[in-house]
Amino acid sequence: MLFIAYKSRSPQLAAAARLLALSWAAALQFWIVLDGAERNLAYFAVDAALAYAFFEMSRGRWFPVPLFFLHAALAPYHLWAGFTGSDIFWMALFLNRSFELEVTYVIACSLYRIYTLRAVRPPERRS
Image 1 (cartoon, rainbow, N blue to C red):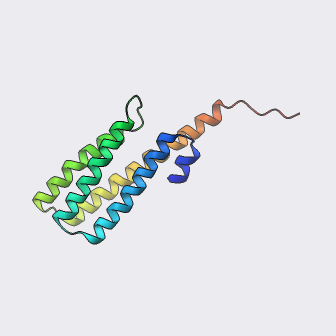
Image 2: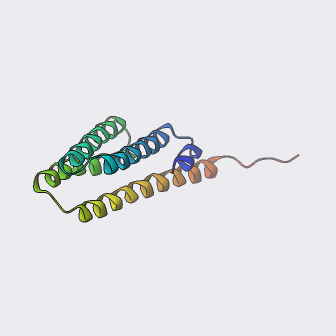
Image 3: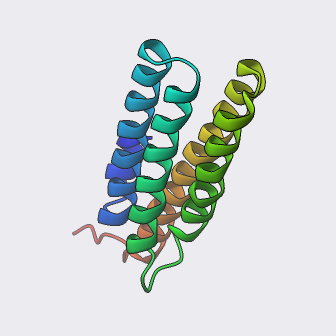
């Protein structure tokens, strides 16, 4: 994801890819170190920060809007899971699928940008 986002030459796609990679690393550490409600509160903090970052990135651009809405929905989910003591299996399953959806979205946007940049570039002349 990071390589393709950088290859697209879009600062916004590269920033989103970095944010998602850092959030994945933090979430993995929280999964290992924390337990129960502390883990859910840590996930809430990460998703709230990502929602804010994608909200700020979305001013005048459409690319980060789905990422904002996803993290804005995940933040209350973590609070709910922390208060109700939701089963860890379902939480992990839901979070893994949402992360895979995000990665797929960033990769697809990056590939689309690469495609459009190559389609717009004039053909090279050989002398």
